[in-house]
Length: 382
Image 1 (tube, rainbow, N blue to C red):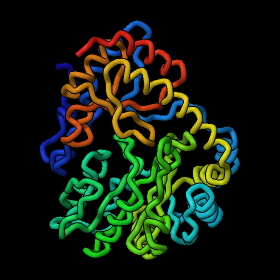
Image 2: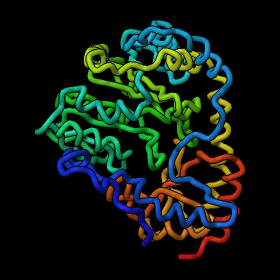
Image 3: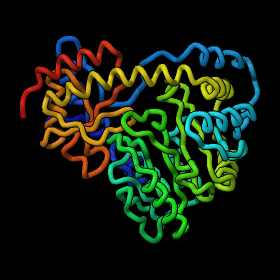
Image 4: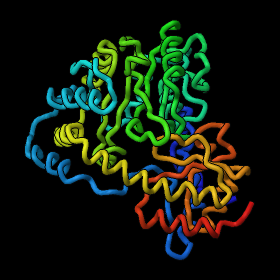
C-alpha cells in the first residue's frame, strides 16, 4: 500500500507530538497517493482537503487594505463594529436573533479555537470531551492537548458522566449529515443536566443542500437560552478567507467572557486588517450566495459521476464534502482513485467507523471538477 513516510525524524526524544500523546498528522500519510495521482496525465485533481480555490471577493480585499497602515495592537475582543456585524449576520442568515455583541469573540480561523477550547475552558486529566462518532480530527487533538479523554458519540447518544465539553457539528465534516433540530435540542438538554458545555462547529452552516441546517443558538434548539452554549463560525468557506484566518465564537456571555480573559493573557488576537475584512464579509450576503452557487454546481456534477463509478454517496445533505463508499477498505479506494489522478481523503481519518468510506471536497476549480468527472469514467472496478 502506498503511504507517506513518518514525520518527526530527528526530533529529540520527549519533544513534540510524542510527549503530548498526539498522532501523526493524518494528511502526511497521503503523500504516496498524492505522488501517484500527480503522475497521471494532466496532473492531480486534489479533492482531499477542503481548501478554497476561488478568489477572495474584491470588497473584502479592499476592506483589508483600508486599515493596513494602522500601527497599534488590535483588540482581542475585536472592534465593536465587527461584533455588531456578526450579530446582524447571525440574525439575517440563520434566524439567531438573541446574541449579544459582547458575546462575540473573533478567532484566528476556527481550527485554533477547536484545538485550544478544552484548554481555554480549563479541562484536564479526568475530564471527558465528547465528539461525533465521525469527526474532524482536531476535536480529538484538542482534548489530548488539554490532557482530557476524547469519547466518540452518535448525535442522539447521551454524553457519559464526567463529560465537560460536547462537540456538535452540523453539517458534518466529513459526512455532510445534517442533525435534526430535535436531536440537537436533546443533546443540549442532556449536556445541561450533567453540567457540560456544548460547542457547535458551524463552519458549514451556510451550505445546506437537501436539508436546512440550524444553529445551536436558534431558539428551537437552545430554548431561547444560550447558557452553556458556544457556536463556532468560520469565514473560510463562505467568504474564501481561509488564508486570512477569520472566524469567531459566540453564545453564552459568561463563557465568552472567560475565553476573552484567557486569550488576552495569551495574546490571541486577530489582526486588525483581518477584522476589517471580516466586518465587510459579515455585512455582505451577495458574495456568500455566489460562492454557495459555485459549490452547488460542482456538487451537481460530481455526485452523479461518483454514483456511476460505483461510489455510493451517503448522508451528504449539506456541507462541503461528499461521503461515499465502494464497499471496500478506504485505502483501497484511495489508491484506485489516485491511479486515475484523483486524490481523496480516507474515511479512517475521521474515526474507526469511516474505514470503508472516502471523503471528497467540492473545493476545486470548475476545470478540475470536470476533469474528475471525466476520470471517474475510467475508474477500475472493485
